[in-house]
Length: 211
Image 1 (spheres, one colour):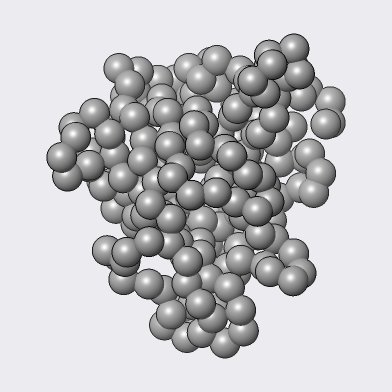
Image 2 (cartoon, helix red, strand yellow):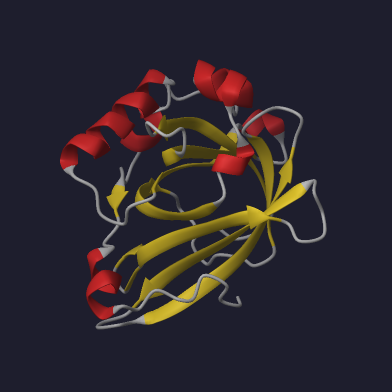
């Protein structure tokens, strides 16, 4: 772990920008976000499987106002590829942008991560007040607290599937301002997501695709 890496998962509210802590509006969080970059060991990033076209469709839980749903999808393989959809659920807490995530499936790359703290670290606010992008951080410690952090991830989400370098640099700057540069710098670093593949092949799954 690079310099600045904490021994334990940081308190979620301490990571958030003042805007998120004081003004986060979950109603502006709903809808489609495309992942443009990540550091996340649950997502395949190299041969023989390299995921692309990652997308997050966030919505209120249809029967439980204390939760929200996230249909997270990715695409694998050549050409139009094959889509995989994960049905994620998050508990909404009394603290804005502070959630507890639950994942009913498993990952070959980091198995048995079923409950993970998820924090909206910062958002990009458009002139009309909507959220253009979000930075989300997940963290989980080992069951034995003395072992420290088992899993830490950061996800760069944007309303647009493809963004220019200046937009990405602004997001990265905001991540580092929240003290989370160590996640991006930890081996193997950030992975940039290829969204152009699914734009070219029109191969994103339906927004309400079943897992």
